[in-house]
Amino acid sequence: MTRRAWPVLLPVCLLLLGLGVTRAAGGQQTPPPITEVNVQQLGPQRLGPLPPVVAPPNNPPSSAKIHLGKQLYFDTRLSSDNTVSCATCHDPARGWTDAGPTSKGIRGQMGGRRSPPVSNSAYNPLQFWDGRAASLEEQAKGPIQNPVEMGNTHEVMIHTLDTIPGYVDAFMRVFGESPMTVQQVADAIAAFERTVVTTDSRFDRYVRGDHGALTALEQQGLEIFNGKGHCTACHWGPNFSDGRFHNIGVAEKDPKNPDQGRYVVTKNPRDMGAFKTPTVRDAALRAPYLHDGSEPSLESLIELYDRGGENLNRENLDALIVPLGLSPQEKKALVAFIRALDSLNPEVSAVQPIPPAGLPK
Image 1 (cartoon, rainbow, N blue to C red):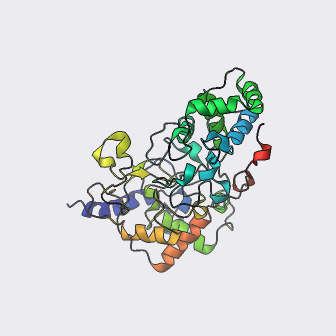
Image 2 (spheres, rainbow, N blue to C red):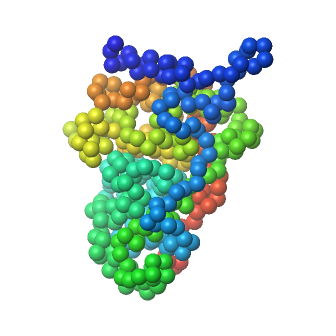
Image 3 (cartoon, helix red, strand yellow):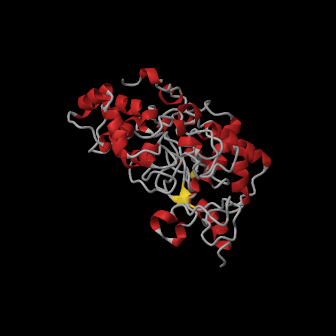
């Protein structure tokens, strides 16, 4: 069997294994609720509401630590020229990312990748598009000393904070020791980021029993997401992400200098051009899409998947990326369902930035 043939048959076989039916009276088969179906059976979790966030034992949360982390998150003084904060690239008003297509750092420098969303990052087993950080705490340290992003050093950043009496007092209250450290800065920012969780959407209300929360079109989109659209091959579980890395056939902007993705971390040839699966929650707020911001809309993104990606001749194209054959109506329904995943909980959807006047002095 050829490499191109077995991925086409795989979803069909898994569909038969995964759909499972129950028999009603009279022998008639009735399907289970669509949210209880994981047609790919490639991950252990079905679609559903998010569970509580679990903080690491070495960084327990407190209200004071979370508030300190929020202040640091919105403070441009962590950057070398006082122009870039965490929120510059991870803006609550833009679905906790930025305008794209890729992110802008100090002195107007453009990065090579799109900012991944901070929302629900607490559920990611690895951070960054290539998974190079094993925790939110480790991730928080990276942008500060990245020459394109904040362009600072950890030492200079700590010196800056140590000259601000309000921060000196706050760190002492939270951590009970001095001098302040880079790890404490990272711990506080991570504690805040773990509160950015989209616990409520019309989809969540639907699976909790409010069957009027989704329109008929959105329910059709859910069925396509869970079936013909092949979306749950990678976007499964409460966070609509497997946390893994896939090459989905994105065309290279610069073929002579391709973004190697996960390969840079693992040096495994199978990871060349593979990137982490982003959550679909709040995706409608985060255009443009993909690691390079190359798809301007949900509609164009779905067209890419429907074609089976752009680079079909690449040997490491994920085996689950195949042409889908979606009709215009099915594409419309799929977009409608994705929009129903927008967060409704105000502590995430309506977070207001801390203005400079509200930061420690």
